[in-house]
Image (cartoon, rainbow, N blue to C red):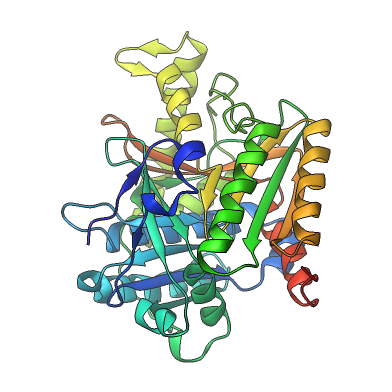
Length: 385
């Protein structure tokens, strides 16, 4: 099955005609950190983001086809992916090894699982998937329909869809890093927003399309990009000890010192070139910073919009007013949080070949805090409408 590409999020990402409906033999893989509350309280939010990035990195490698990148999406404290049937065994092994690695090496308990699309379809839940394509195989997965969210909830409940942890090789972690320092808000505050439709099928998708258009009129998504155009990003010369420790844990014991040395060397080169004007001996840090900003996943769909936006106070108030009205009408439920900065977790496949994508979250696990608000509303009866 060919997954279609979208290139203009604001114009295309809400349109189900831009997506492929997954056939029943496909699967949905999902992972989430079990103890996010405890880890957030312990100040380990960057470790949680790093583990979620590791899930995307591993699934991107394990679920990719020779002629098509994998559709994976970062969720702050977890991730989801569409799995073609011919890659199921590789993905199952990678997820099992990820859960074991996360628990033993990162001390971050990770719950992982796989749900067949056929089981979701049998319950009336569709999974629509597209690739947000930035060129040169730099992609993010986009998901419409209720299926992906239901698959996540089934996996979180445990039971038959759970994949047990077991030691083993994990593909794709070689280029994972979290060396950037949190990027302060430029326009006011960082808003992490999760919106889920309450109306089923095409009706719910139409509601989301209208809502996304109204959000974009309040603040253009490009204007609210939390990394701006990349001009304010300052490469770190010496990464933090925590960032280096996380990277080291992606290598086997005998190779960890070399991993740290490479991270120090790579950061030193980028940082020094940036300070020397941005271009030295073929290293162009200005182009790289622009690429980091352009290829950050601050706008995405996972059944409904998931945004990380840098908004003014007036824009934030208008967004809340809009969402409150839609919630009272029985169209949606939403969760949001505010942060003072954006955090980045990076997946660099090949720096020289311009292969890199970047996962953003609000500082202090903004997506997770928004999900806590949303889960509290799910426990309440839906509004009349």
